Length: 131
Length: 131
DNA sequence: CTAGACCTTGCCGTCGGCGTGAACGCCAAT
DNA sequence: ATTGGCGTTCACGCCGACGGCAAGGTCTAG
Image: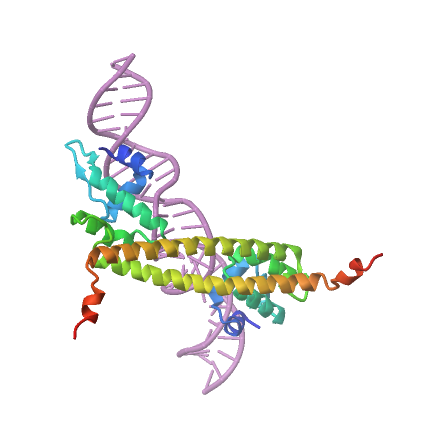
């Protein structure tokens, strides 16, 4: 399988695959003419990468997973390093959630304060008491 | 007040203030020698910028607020454009929260799945039944 | 033989918010 | 007069994950 086919099957660009190779995430064998050659296991690796990136991991953080896969494990998450990355990422997500929650509260408070300031007379009863 | 003093009082770097000026967020008067001169209202503007950036707004998004302040309004959020930015940011934060929440669920699921796979025999009863 | 569809390497561009350094000017104190 | 501590502009660097383009090589079909 050449780079174009792998790219299409994995749903990424050839440029991205070359980028992964530059990072050492996706080492490719070469044919005599210099073309990169990939196998099914490379498709599995790229799929793993994209899934993890979709969960917010950086490319560097996917490294333990792809190495775990290449080491022959059934899942990229079968190795201790991968588990550690999962834990760390989960902690980061929790921190982000906490921060975003606080930000949300503050944003809403500021928004309502600004709205109150611009509409200083909220007369609800008057409109209700028209005969 | 020169740039160094404003920077210190606002808790930012002089470089940041020059950057804000480049963006047109913080226009500065100049003395005869070319030095930038600032007043108390500029400190208010920088404080507003930093507060909003702390809430996750980009510098561009703070523009309506600082312009609102310079227009003489008591608060940077007194103008319609600022309110709109608040609303939009709140929506973005809500979207991020939803996404992050889903990511968290998925991350935890993957983590637990990986842990189960690595510890295939969780014998709780055995340890409990020792006499 | 040639078109065109693929592949290669290499290198610059993007986005935001500045950091950092060069090379220089201004001013008060010693 | 000089030192030191301000200020100025200019311009590149950084981070991540590629996009895009140039200039060329390779293979297949007609």
